[in-house]
Structure formats: C-alpha cells, structure tokens
Image (cartoon, rainbow, N blue to C red; front, side, top):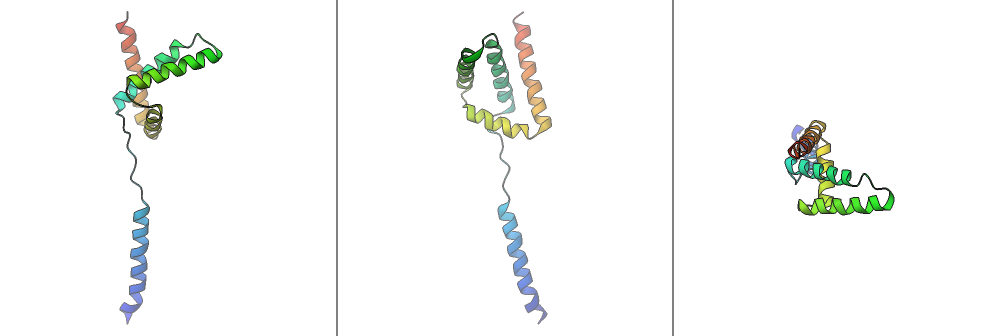
Length: 114
C-alpha cells in the first residue's frame, strides 16, 4: 500500500529532474584562439591609430576599410571577432590576460622598428 503512494511522487520527481537536466545548456566556447584574438586586437589598434589624424566621415570610412582589411588578413569575419570577444569578456581574468598579450605584441612591434 505504501508503495502505491510513493510511486506517483517518485515518478514526478524523476520527470522534474529530467526536465531540469534537459534545460541545461552547454557553455559556448570561443572558436578563435586567444593568441590569434590578441594579434587581431593589436592590429585593430594599429588601424585605429592610423586614422586618428582624420575627422568625420573620412576617418569613419577609412577606419572601416582598415578594420575590414585586418579581418581579411586574419581570415575571420567581424561577427566572429565580436562573438569571440563577447565570450572571452565573460572571464574577467582571461580578458585581462588577452589585452595584456595584445599590448605586448604592440610593444614588440614598436621596439622592432627602432
């Protein structure tokens, strides 16, 4: 008799746990490596710096052309870059490491030109 009272609760519990488990999503991982992202970030910084002397529409259109060239050079799209940057930015320590890596690449480029 006790078993008949427990079965509905057990069944409901199993269904409830199964529904919770099925609602879980697996975390999305970046599709671009951190080292490549750092290089792209450094190149985008250089592209932005190259247009800093311009103003208005000329600056915007030239910057857009430079950005497109950077993405083409690294064989990624702007959307891929933005999606990966958004994913990586969720890890505050990881994004700080990424930014520091991009800074080091810029410093290395600067020192090699001297």
